[in-house]
Length: 319
Image 1: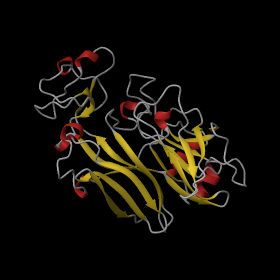
Image 2 (image 1 turned 135 degrees about the vertical axis):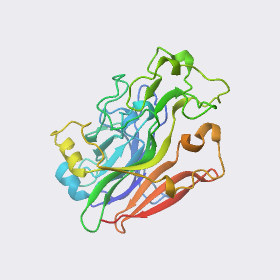
Image 3 (image 1 turned 180 degrees about the horizontal axis):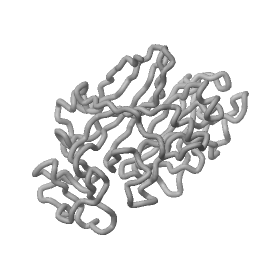
Image 4 (image 1 turned 90 degrees about the vertical axis):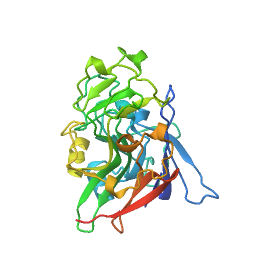
């Protein structure tokens, strides 16, 4: 959700939704409603251009109006998603969109494929088995769950994504190996269907790693020898070049990254260890993000920090 107050439509709460496996044929994924919950007057639902649903409905945030007017045709809302396995693109995706059609704030008709400005879109693993045209250091188990367009009172700005980054020497599709985090445990019946295990640089693992270990849990998915909670930051000038077609959508790379594990509680109650993983292999550390532009405050959800409940961390953004 994103609260946005503009002259054209006044205050609205904008929505995006999706699921791990999206339906086929696709369904619309975006809408808005009035903050008056006794009369919400929901408008939508809309598609984001012809983009994959795996790329558009995981996070949403406001684009500063001056930047959007100059580079994105007055589209003040940013939306995107990262879906593990690279189905969304091998890195966070981001699009600017606007769901009203005129200065009077008339909402687009339900079912409209809204025009979008692509700001960031890496190659999808559905198009190639190679790890290419991707986020530097990309790994299939990566998680990018929140984003924010940060600005400061001094005029600096950055686009931030927060998530749980795969940083281990190997990653694989299958299960946690109870023997040690460093050893893969692939789903053996899928061997030969796609590249089940890779080294950190994206090259396939040796054949000795393509075995299913004994004693694993039933929680199948993309696993890594190690995860770390991270922020990555992009220069909006790079996204502007994507918007104008000067560079390809996969060309921008973060200019900085920040590991924030030392600030987190890291599931002190040990909730759902089989599903989440434990120790260096624990997934789902970071959730949604929000930015208070008036006070330069960044709010970040840490998942499973108070038993099964999240905790909100707050950083003051300076610079």
